[in-house]
Image (cartoon, rainbow, N blue to C red; front, side, top):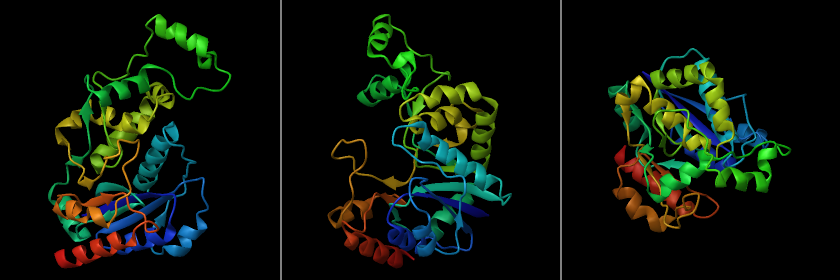
Length: 283
């Protein structure tokens, strides 16, 4: 069965072309959604024989636009009516550590399983950060009275907190591999629950809460594997993983990940060369 490979890209068309050259496979259809803020033509010039998605969004970090772009991409792929076992979602700054044939074989052997990073809300530092992102309103219209700093302080002093629209709060990375069943459930839930979706329009980093919360509060929870097969380095404890370099190669090679995130050909092209060689050896 085929796999739909979804790539969200916003920079480095030449690097994207090189990435895609490593992901060609008879049982993989490649879909690219280019951030609506940037000119799509350089990407179309650099990459051929892929599907460029039309429902683009101008993405702003932390805002609902990040989630909206994912939902738009999923919706457009499902409307092709092609049959896929999974949608494998990566960034244009990811790069494969293993041959795509190995990933396709793995997914075909487990067509009902999804691979999604998920944590249940607790009392740790990350949970406390995520809690703040949904307990109070974010990104309201400029003239909304709730944006007033005095009103905010009054609401906080009164102990007002927004009620989360799911029984349990789950959060995690937005890079995942979902079964077609999970994607269809997510899109159907989104269409049937506009009030829930509106809650997340005013939530910080809703892309790291909504999808996990929908799927892990659903009957499909049993098919959600808490593993995304990505190599990250959060060593600088920033809001984004660090850009990997050739010095990180030993750790990348020793991992069980499918993809390394994130790489920049303008910072260190040698790492991409090393991963190409590793892929060839594994092939």
